Length: 241
Ligand SMILES: [Zn+2]
Image (cartoon, rainbow, N blue to C red):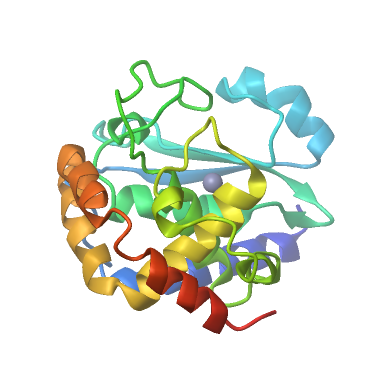
């Protein structure tokens, strides 16, 4: 990387971090037993990434970068961000960095502690949670929300279609995974919850921060379809790109 690339990338991370703390006000207060420090591993090109990343980190290479939380309860555990340069910039840098911040300040335990439904890389969780809702809607939606805030034309362009009810998005999983649903509609769901239902989010976060994922699932189930109409109305008022 050129010196300027490094300066720009660090600035992007600092801006993302300060944005995150403005939203959640947890600076200096990571969840219990989280010792994670983050190491960023940037390959010079996509070609190098595909060639080396599996050997170096035991992760799939068919993606635009990944975040690996590892085992945060272990002292000096190094969470790893793996990515590559594309057009002189680190691809997906701030989205993946939000996963780190979310894992450190919002969700207790390692990646596999929260409800999930697959064995896929990078973490290859051994035991899928028996039933939904999982945490995919939140994790991926938050990554997009903090990374883009109000400036997300590709998501906002979809809002008018009202493709999904909010209650469906809470049930995002790896079987119904597609880019629009997980990232763009995930963004809209999280943005709506952060802007319009902040008390509900704070209540949910109490359980996530304690690692009480059974309670988390109960909270989401209790929400049910109660916010669907309001979400639809909000989609109409969301500023078009
Ligand atoms: Zn992500």
